[in-house]
Image (tube, rainbow, N blue to C red):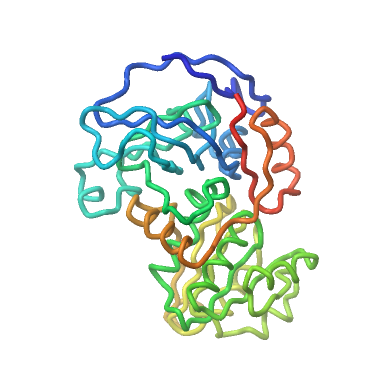
Length: 335
């Protein structure tokens, strides 16, 4: 079958619309007609080869929502016409220790949706059946795409490391951080938002933050010493990490989901004396994505989005790169 896709031919080049020839559908694969696809900062990083892992030509897009159009003979649990989403990963080996214990996203052979695989800025996308997750009926499907990458990325550390009564800090109120604030508030935490943009203070409170602090204000950060059970860092910028770690309570944890490219200096004593931890995590397993979608549906958690027709994809990428997006961009398929 031929389908159409927006193709990145090389790093930092505008995408062009092309017809792509697909191989026959795999036995355990599903094919999905794309209706909406979120534009994530990771798409920009892969377009620009910021991480050195990109493969060209590339079809980006990994926050896909659409309807199943074909199901391989060995696929389980999905039927044609069902609305599903596909996120950062689209396959895993299904037999290693990680897959068999429910941590498919940590499989050593996990297949990223946009590196060595055709992503969702296209008429159709394919994935292994386990990675095409059914959407809850109550969820607004046109807004749901960013939940499949950004949403589960910030939801996972909440379920791993936070209790509803905890004091939680979210560093960065952008594409990831604004969803983290919404999830943490719905989870029941006392939420402090850290942002370098004072014009986001009121918005952060609107998302559910109880307190807002300037991440540039060292004196204000120092006053918070020893207070947070969990800090989730969503930024890719370098901050005063020693001061940030100092805001952790005993047994507190600084958890990274934002890809800071510079090494993070950590003084051992600041961890040892208060029994603190530093950690990180990627997106989440299919089960974690399903749990996050159910939580979002029950608590009306949705990203704040801007919509572009997919035909304006290069303009949308430029807006994301300029830092002006508020807060997630969704491309609506208009082939």
